[in-house]
Length: 504
Image 1: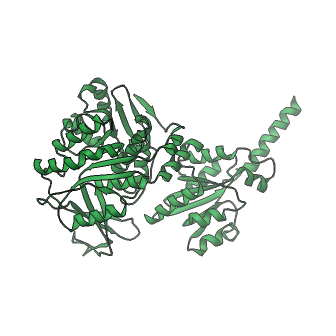
Image 2: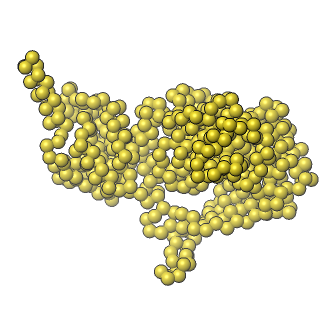
Image 3: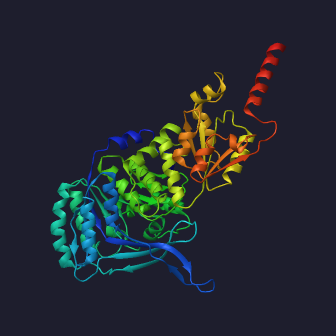
């Protein structure tokens, strides 16, 4: 097995040059209705929660969410799904029209449109979480008669698309007749068919598809393996690819990344970078959407898998199901290519990340400095700073800024290396370089809850104090490790070199 820790450098160019694809999404559509508000207990003894409804919102779900995510990436999308004849179906059609998603919906009088009503509560400063979900649905399979009529409209539409996504949630739309008819007709036209399988569905239902994308548990069910050790699945796949229903198998492994298996090469483990996970809802949909977008545009299976991996990672950092944009994926790729560390971001990206942390009720701590010749005193100080909140941002003076502040002989270490060393510390969440003499612009955009400085400063001497206190933040000054400073280290090194020269 080949293990890859980061996407290839050329992937940034591949992503930027992909043409706009036309994608047909076939599967189980639904509406997600969110009822949100503060939650409390009737009493400490009673296990009953009371949610005070303050906001109600409807979102596209299931295959409709995949279509919406593809549209957010810029694809031209057609959605083929199964609905009832009810207000939920009318609401879903309006939402598709608003997003400019074409609809090839099959109306079935024998069922309601699937609606998942989610009750989301928040208490105190904790971020909102789902406390209950109520499903309104019927999961019986679409009858052959209506399925035939639907396919008569659906199959001719393949001529106007570059790829097909089958999003199976086991709600009745993806019958064997529908799935096999779509796969056979699409492959006859040379179109790739990418399948997100339903839980507990038979493996041969998707026979002939281009790629099957189960998650860890779906894969172990499909393949009859233990969910506790995915490496067993790797060995099984390597030994017997004849049982695969697809040319490629992409198994998503949550925080461990993905396993891409192809019949013509060894399995590839694509690692995921550590994420601040907020909500895993919709991560699988984000993966299949980015995967299909790239595949339809002509990207290789490996490149498409990496793009899906990044999109899924970005999705779990967002509350609820929120779109991942092409620009966000491009920025993620740029971090890997230009810095070698996904922690090192531009100011706009750091500010956006911190805005999301604030939405979750997390406290952001920021400190700034040159960090030239990183030493033990810096490390101890940064660890203490991290303990003052949930996320630590380190703003680092650029080389030009250091020269203006400390003279032409500094910095000793160039900015890219200073940033990389800071990013390697477990206590540091984000590193941002700034070129100004003061961190004022960084503070104005990031708006940390706590501004920290180390040294012998008084609080009223901390640069940027007035900005932070003006919006309700606070300033902290931490102590120093006696006898440790970059200036003393540099002087000691220079003194040692001078002594050796005199001795020689």
